[in-house]
Length: 248
Image 1 (cartoon, rainbow, N blue to C red):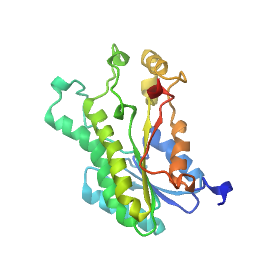
Image 2: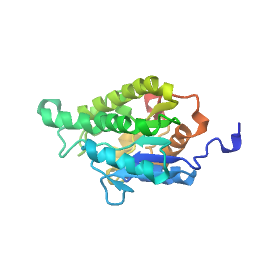
Image 3: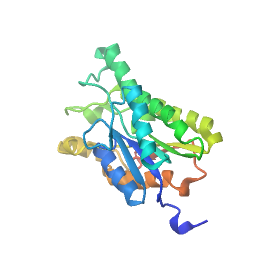
Image 4: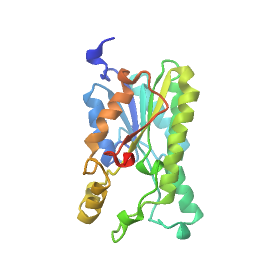
């Protein structure tokens, strides 16, 4: 075993959906720094391959393009998520359409992307990393959000909890092809604009053992680990990256 290079991603072709977002951008930079070629599938103009993940046909074409770019696909990170327009956070005022959109924009995006990428990994194996959430394993504390403009919706948490289960199912199902499937669940990683609300930021910080919120670079190491040979015997797990919040 070449331990010196066990975390290297040299010559690997990695697909990252939602890689143009606040967290995704730094993960893309980190994965590239470890030697990988990265194909970013996103609706944003800066994406390697522009795609509306609501469309299965667009997604199929995007993944095909990503495979053609390097002749193979070695890894996938499913960063993309979409709750839809507006914020209907209360159960009593959330209509069926918004509820369904949040589920599809979380578990639906991950499911379809995994389904369409399997044919490009079956011959040589690979690593899939899904993105869960702190709220995949526990409920948000309403007191954190009180008197702020922010909220966490029930369909987001439900969709991310389903993503953790999908990870385990796919890990079992795809092991025969040498495809590993794991999940990373970030804790409080508020966007830069959200961090401007000092009251909310302080409340989030107080929830963690480490006394601070998470930043994009805090996710890079675990992503590289799960995509690399260093995690060869790891599949079906959900790794919390939350500063110890769920360990209290």
